[in-house]
Image 1 (cartoon, rainbow, N blue to C red):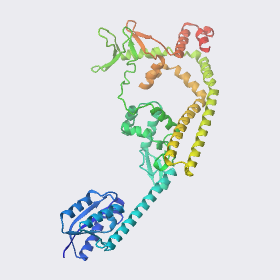
Image 2: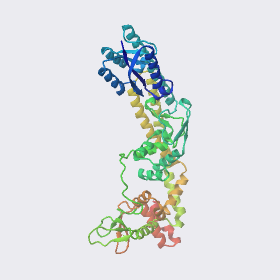
Image 3: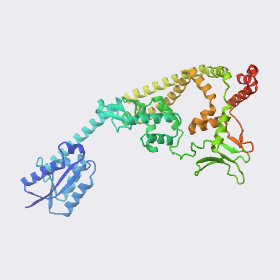
Image 4: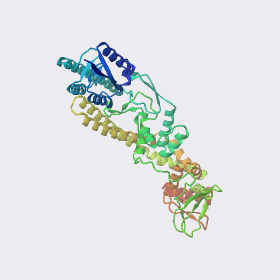
Length: 500
């Protein structure tokens, strides 16, 4: 009697294929067994990387072919676990084929399912294969968990790092891309918009999408931390070098926390920092901006019908810088002004120290709670879900406190430099506005004139609406100084008002 058969072979992973379990090897063994035992091969089924978890397309095709060709009564497989390492799944497949009168034959041992003893032996082998697979998986997961808990990242390597070695012995280094990512974090801390950060990175050879940039800026890995399911969501110190400090990372998260994740198209361009800030003195409408491309000249104009306000941007920018210069402290008053600023800043010193003490106390209390939570979980007093939720809440509070501590420490450190910086800024408002990028220019505008400023076309100059109170005093001092002799400054009303 002719013994027609199909041959089935499968490798579920590339690793199996590269380590002696290739399809060709399985096929050769099955063909040799068929020749030596009088089988006629009528077809081959199977393929690379067929999943061991669910019946795949290839095995379904073989079962369909068996139903169609009633002459095929045997399926030869090199080993039973080539059907699946999931014992229940493989046994169901074998039972279904047996119900159709098809016998499974293992080429390696000659065992087949033609007898109850053969079926039982096949089931035992499949169960042992599943145990081996589960055991290896558990070891793999356990190894990854140990690495993660030890601070060694074993997942997909984030952009900006190189890795040498494997598992617990892996070493990480920041590469050239990492240096650019570091710049992205620094720019974010300076208040630069994401679209501008993307432009700057692109100019330096690193192109990232808005989603990718957001993912980078919110990944604690860049701050030397690790967080994954293997650490139960807890943030732990990593063994890899940090691109930015943890406090800086938290400050970036604070900046991002007010964002919706929607990246808006830039509304202004650096060529028109005063757009919507200047209003027409006649009708109060904000001036719009446009460029005469033929001459490449920029203008601001009022869009009200009949209004003839139309001024070159160059002129408005020059006059605006000159206006800002009127808020500059005269050189002869710098020493006195520096003393005033020092008094204000150092007066806050005691408040900062008290605030720092309170913040450190809160931090210590939260760290103790976190420690008790870990002990309770280790003792089995709380389940994993409650532990994970509690840890997340505590760590979120700790993160906010660390940001506040960093702010207070920054305020406390090098107060003299802070005084010098404030004085220097107040001495160059005009040039600072002219030379800055759009974001800083507009911050200066809004600080000085929160309600905007009017352009009077009749007088061809600006008219202020309301001013920042402190800077208004500075303006009065400057004007007063221009109108009085140096010897009269001691009795200056503005000076008295500022001191009071």
